[in-house]
Amino acid sequence: MASPTFIPWLLFTLLQTTAAALSSQPPFSQTPNTPPLVTIKNGTLAGAHNPSYNQDFFLGIPFASPPLADLRLRRPAPSKPWPGFTRLADEYGPWCIGNVLPVPGLTQPAKHREDEDCLHLNIIRPSPSPGPAPVPVPVPMPVLVWIHGGGFQDGSAVDPRYNGSFLVRESVAMGTPVIFVSINYRLGVFGMMYGAAVEAEAGTNLLLHDQRRALLWIRENIADFGGDPSRVTIAGQSAGGFSVGHHLTGRDDALFSGAIAQSGPPFSTTPPMTPAEKEAHFDTILNITGCPRGAAAMSCLRTTPASLLQRAGLLLGYSDAVTIDADDILTNSSYNLLRAGAFVKVPLLIGTTRNEATSILQFAMPGPLNTFADFAGIGAAASNGGKPLPEELVRRWFALYGDEIDHPSPAGLGTVLAHPGPELGAEYGRTALFVGDAMFNAGKRFAARAWAERGVDCYSYFFDTVPAHVDAETMGATHFMEIPFVFGNKEGAGWEVDPFPEDAGMRRRFEDLAEVMSRMWISFVVYGSPNHHRRKFTPNPLEPIAQLADILRLVLGGNVTWPPYSREEPMEFVFSAVKGASLQADTWREEAIQMFFDLAEEVNRP
Image (cartoon, rainbow, N blue to C red; front, side, top):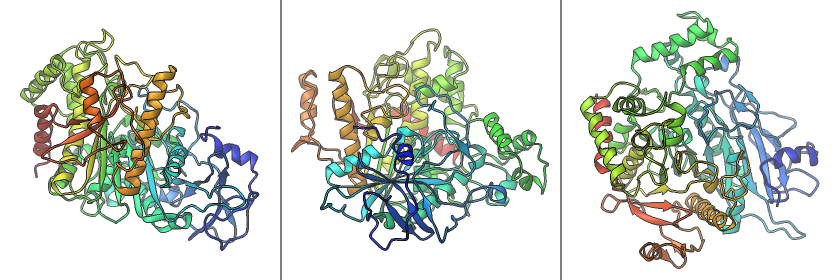
């Protein structure tokens, strides 16, 4: 079967779609010789049909006006109508302008087009079954909205590794069809700029406002595609997961009914930027662009070549700090909002990978990690915005993570070596555990507890599978590696190196895990619970009897049961292609992770 990764581009040349008259037929009405047509508030769209997967694509749809000229560095304006003609929506648009983050195993090396005019979304929906008597698709369908990652500097909805065709196909096979939507948002300084001049023009948190504008567009228009605007689940990984968290703790505009946060929890130990730090950020941008300080600064930045702003973002580096303001999306720190129960009360599916920080460390570390000072320096960057931490606190963490290496918990290093060699250093493993907890695991646990304490369903997971294209002893089950499994991408479409192994037996186990995970995600989108996946689970017959007993205990009628998180019995679902699926208590590294909560309380104190 053909991979759908490049199908939209192939269709553009093969189908030679043409504009058609406005149609009063239902959204799925089409003939074999015409493209699918949908009429929305702004006009009519002509998409492309994929006969191999029996899906309709509507690609590169503008959900906002192009953020150019005077609209640059402003909140997104609604997209403008196109009366009187049919707009082609059969090609993906460009990536937003950003800067490549060369994180091992994550970066997409394929060439792509970038442009400031990038606020587009893409829709993939099932089509009626072909034949003389087509079986209609039941409508309205639940909607999954994907927010890409990339450190708010890199990435795009157009990245072929986020191919939604596999998920849509699997949802149809389950008998619960869904619509998949992926969205772009502005990156780097185009989407996240700081300073008093920026705040004076309501130019803060633009990337979050872009995402909100896309969600507003979906609420207003998705019914025309057969979607249900009351059943929209937002999902994302890394920066996309953090974005999901910001919307959960931000203003509730009733834009979604469920949320999935992969390796990006709605909680951070990073303290808010001070006014002085914001002004230093803004001054750096002015110095690079040559724009004057004062009243003319923003108007100058709006006429500066985009390449100069892109360079400013590159020199400023990574920043995930959001601006907190009473008139913006976020009115307080995530810690204070979660502790107060001030979050959007929708079901949450949240999780991390075993070795979250290994790839990030290899990207960010200045040299081998051999000493306590190396550990402390990386720790300050990961947990305190680069500001030094009290030495007594860091020394306690240093001891605790040393104990974890000597006496591993269920969430230890796994296949990763604590001391893999001189290039990475003697403290590589200890530092990787610390950074993973600081950036991801602590936030996951804190959020899961907050949901449980408010009686809202939360499903926590722990991904423990090492893909074939990364080194098990230095990377392991690192950041981003759950993506091909969640997307049900058994073909390795879009990946430079196939993440699934060549060995037939082990590849089958990877494919089985991909089917289980993608079905659980679909089940969550449809039902608000991952347990309606309709997939029988086969334990690994080579596992020890004790492990088999634990696994079999979870099997009820052939289905693996994933319980909601609770304070009394905090459990997380473990996804392993080698050991099979199981539950484990989310109580590992209790003292070390509690210290992150205590640190957050300290830095967020009024």
